[in-house]
Amino acid sequence: MAEDRAGTLSSQGRPSLQDRRDKRTHPHSPDSPSCGRGGGGGAGAGGRQRRVGPNGTRPRHPAEGSSAFRGPWLRPRPTAPAGYVLRLRRGRGLFPSAAAQDAVQRDSGLRRDAAATSSMGFVKVVKNKAYFKRYQVKFRRRREGKTDYYARKRLVIQDKNKYNTPKYRMIVRVTNRDIICQIAYARIEGDMIVCAAYAHELPEYGVKVGLTNYAAAYCTGLLLARRLLNKFGLDKVYEGQIEVTGDEYNVESVDGQPGAFTCYLDAGLARTTTGNKVFGALKGAVDGGLSIPHSTKRFPGYDSESKEFNAEVHRKHIMGQNVADYMRYLMEEDEDAYKKQFSQYIKNNVTPDAMEEMYKKAHAGIRENPVHEKKPKREVKKKRWNRPKMSLAQKKDRVAQKKASFLRAQEHAADS
Image 1: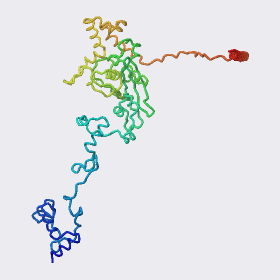
Image 2: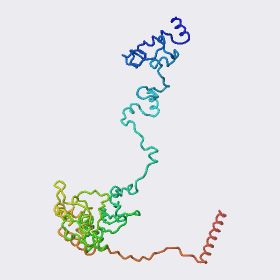
Image 3: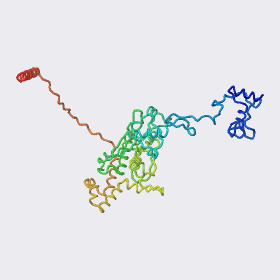
């Protein structure tokens, strides 16, 4: 009876009972106890129990010959189109085969071995369309390399509880032939200059050479401080340090008088190293009576190893003795180099021994009269070279000349 039924099922296109039993006992079948795929084996195989109908048959089963019946281990391997390779392990998808890649490389003139030995590898495109759409240019003076906005932000921002009180900055800039010192504060419209002093004004006080050295920077800062205090009427209240010692000095407010003028050093893009001329201008302004927060760590004479400050070394720089010592050295070692390098000193009769006295007189002159005197404007009579107007007779004569010239040209053309 069972055999007849099995034959009947087989004739109807369904698997016979014996085939189904063989399927369950196949060593690679997921339903086999020995298969490690987690099939319907026994409890010892670690698989789950499969539901089985009467006579060991399952209620429903796909038709024999279908891909579902054969299972994934018996299904045919997928094929890829010509020129492509199907990767099933690392990354699924269609990829050009080696032959196709070689053909592309040959067409483009690239060699496969050169591409294999290239160390560049995959490079991600960073500056894409989204990058350029969202790109924002930096401030103009940052693009020009003129302003350090990281430092400017901290020099300009004022405390909110001080409202519209200006925050003053002492701006120091050193050029090839000049030193510029200014007192300014920031507004939305731009920086407002309160006072300014320049090294090219020092010849009026007796310093005609060396307008960009450390001693000249000190004189320019001193001139700025005395000029500013004179402008505000505080030059008699805050006289600063009259005798130059090079040592640390800080201005203190006087009781019953307006407070000391406070500002902050703006060094710009200069490298704030020890001995920089920017700090020479700072020292001159402090000795002149301005209150500027600072320390002695950047003045000449400070030793970073011992952390000690030698004020005498600083004073020599303020009085130009470092230049005088070098002048004496060149005079003894190389006369030609001395004449070449210090030609303007020789021309103005500035000797190493007279240099300290020259700067002392300059300091006294600056304190005596720091006011900048404007030069009177010259009245310049503007010249004009306009073409004078023609009279009526001249206009008629000009028309007659044009007519005569035209007629002569016509006659000449007719004759030729």
